[in-house]
Amino acid sequence: MSQTLSKVIRAPRGTSLNTKGWIQEAALRMLMNNLDPEVAEHPDKLVVYGGIGKAARNWESFESIVETLKKLEENETLLIQSGKPIAVFRTHKDAPRVLLANSNLVPAWANWSTFYDLDKKGLFMYGQMTAGSWIYIGSQGIVQGTYETFAECARQHFGGTLKGTITVTAGVGGMGGAQPLAVTMNDGVVIAIDVDRSRIEKRIETRYCETLVESLDEAIQLALDAKKGGRALSIGLLGNAAEILPEMLRRNFVPDIVTDQTSAHDPLNGYLPIGVTLEEGGELRRNNPEEYVKRSKASMAVHVQAMLDMKAKGAIVFDYGNNIRQVAFDEGVKNAFDFPGFVPAYIRPQFCEGKGPFRWAALSGDPQDIYKTDEMILREFADNKQLCKWIKMAQERIAFQGLPARICWLGYGERARVGKIINDMVASGELSAPIVIGRDHLDAGSVASPNRETESMKDGSDAIADWPILNALVNTASGASWVSVHHGGGVGMGYSLHAGMVVVADGTEDAARRLERVLTTDPGMGVVRHADAGYDLAIETAKNKGIHMPMLG
Ligand code: NAD
Image (cartoon, rainbow, N blue to C red):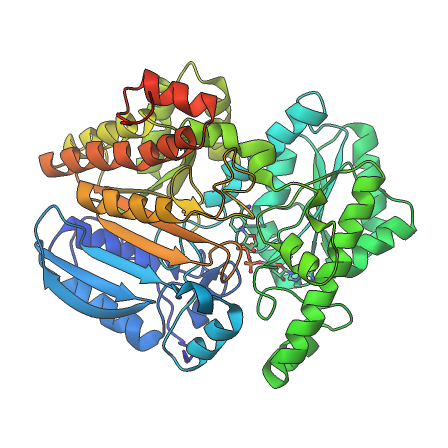
């Protein structure tokens, strides 16, 4: 069990090293950045985002990782087992400096009750996706994906814009907090419900959400007025989604779009049941966890039933990657899967081209370094109007959290190109310090998650988990700076396996070679995974880009 820590963690900035090389330095700064109070949701508990997604198992482990990284040689590799540093081996210069395996359980034991037991004994940790693999960059990390999802929803159902539409969602935590901003970026109105006032306030401070209200009547009135006037507006509504959605139906209020990003993947730590306040919920969680989980799951069933009822009344409803349909299904809502997940509904074509949430952070801490890379993207991808619109909006509307960082969805070929240019910019001194390049695990070729990224695969291969393992192996072989293999991210124990990678652009020739390899193999796995499943767009991409797939024909 991790005790709380009173000191504030913040990554070092500037160009002097605290370690024996820039790759070790990058790992150190990104670990610390994950726990920066501007970045993490509950840094005192080592919790970064996504329920209890942590950066290290406990504070002793954190301190030991920091000390080990400071001494780590350029031909050594540190091994992390669920947030605890367990060994350093001599490897070689091109090998990853850190290899991480977080939250993995043997399949027949892969459930929350085994997890909670092991976590209680101090043997385990939930790594979520980028929390345990040290490449979380705050809510920005998900904004573009969320923006793209709502944009595609707008294209498919509302003539290309959310103007004049109302979206209702819940959960404005680390990731879910991107929803209000993403909807308003698409010119829509959104009511985003959260039980925790401090979460809504955090989104208002960081300009992700515009206003907080406490009454449903007021939220509906504000939303209807904005809809009528064609204005974009984000409203944070304090309350429990499982109570508010049925209440909306009772008042005959049917939104245009309905989704949810509470941390429903973790019924004990991520979802507040009906009928308790946040404080009462905390007490119940501590004193009677079984009862808490029971009530939490029952509330999710009510929540999903209301989403289904809204769908029946004409709303566009989709699952936003938190496994809430599965819980409702297990609780007896047999048609819980009648509304689709966001990946098959809106994202899969991008995965077929190896596109996904590519990101980079400036180790200098200097925002100018990111603004210079923004200019480079605008120049290099001037033909890609959608991407340019995103970069400009991000510059205007996204407040950096922790080390300045940027995200944009890039595909096969594009990532390697950008990696090379960034490395050249570091080498020439145009950027003041090295840049780390990484991505979410939610990517084209790095996840097996049948209720999310691999839902409804064309060939029925949803549950095959060889792919993320091959992804981690090939990225290790290619010389990524750190590589991670996780279980349970996004959707909870038993429902996903996924891999992460980060590669450092320090301006050296060695880095140039590694970047070219890793930023090819990594998105390449996305194309290959989807081509193998029979998607025409992926097959075409593989052929056009010359990816060698021996049995592609
Ligand atoms: P988080 O734990 O930081 O935030 C969850 C929020 O839900 C909290 O603010 C909490 O107060 C609120 N909440 C809990 N129960 C509620 C209820 N009954 N009614 C209203 N609000 C309630 O988590 P996060 O990082 O924002 O992630 C949210 C979920 O989305 C997770 O399940 C995560 O795995 C998933 N996720 C989805 C994507 C995606 O792209 N779709 C990406 C990452 C994570």
